[in-house]
Length: 489
Image (cartoon, rainbow, N blue to C red; front, side):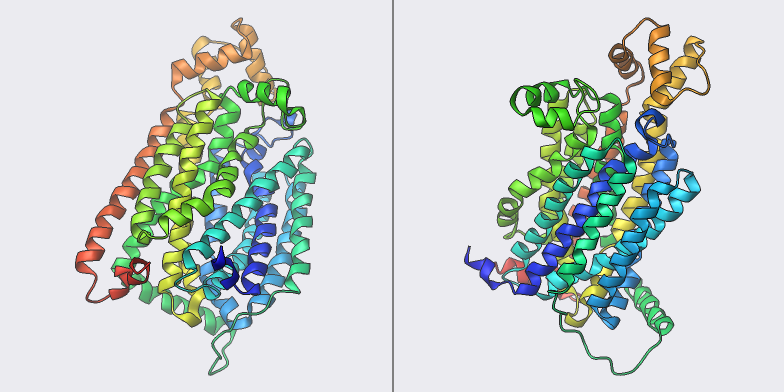
């Protein structure tokens, strides 16, 4: 435990700011997919899965692309100033988002929210990189990732209590962001390189794009970014597909019965109806696993080269996420989530650590910005997978409409999604659960899991080939790619 005393105060303040920001973000984001596509009688907007995929995929992708610019802006104008601006934009967007119900309006405000997050993202990770050493990097980034998941776990637990009133969900997130203004008083600006000449903001951006062009000429690094994108496609389905899939297909009664007997508070407050648990509550167990196990996993993988750790993590993530969509049994889903979380813990922190360690000391935020490029690609492609692909293969609303057409049934056009499903079940003399089981057996919505598995396996295998190529071919021009700082541990 002696290693924890080697972190400066700024490290802990930055991680606390990250925890609060992630609390606010995941407090709404884990609920967002079902909010966008859910039935109107439960407060949902009834957008199509394709529309949801565009908003969450492209919108979140832009969030992760902008740090390429905002990281450099933070390096130049100061971390504290950009954090302050980020919090202002964040709070404004959270207050405005529930006021819009049209696809265009929600898309626009979500992009504003993404801007606030993009200003924030590279700063804290760069602060962690600047306040850790070769000795403390693995544990430091493991702690950083654990803080992310503490926020990711407790945020939804609070907002789920108000799921029936969507405005409150967004307002709670706004209040959490406001708390970071207090923490900002204790944040010490990390050392930055002194500017040798004054530049306008436009000139700064021109320099960024020139640097970006030079980095993209490095084919080795470009290949790495593309490969890592495959992992992020898989990862984002935790938010894009899984809450919707559980809500539509998984029988959560076993978990409900357990809590109703042993912890009634949970079954009473995280259940939309008797016998059913909130899908987001089930999905949130991924964050709980990371809180409990991240330090242990970080201790195990700290002796592994980052590329090798990433490779193992990508493989396990792909298996876990695909298995979450393989069964209607909630216990199977929870086991698969545990598998996924182990892969996430082994792979994801190592990406940030790897890029942070090869970045020049005075360009940490800039290089952390580049670490978000594969996240941008993964989110955008993941949005398509969770949108059009999911809608075609697995969306319960789409499959119900197909069933209605095949059976020649008639339902009123002004019914909510839930009411239409109930009416369909009534017309074929089945209960809602029986109709769900019939659709599962006839249309095999679990096929989406095979698509996710294919993407994840391709990323893991590509990283295996990349690792071999990096070891044998890259050493002359890029000796740092051999990762000697890690092998010394």
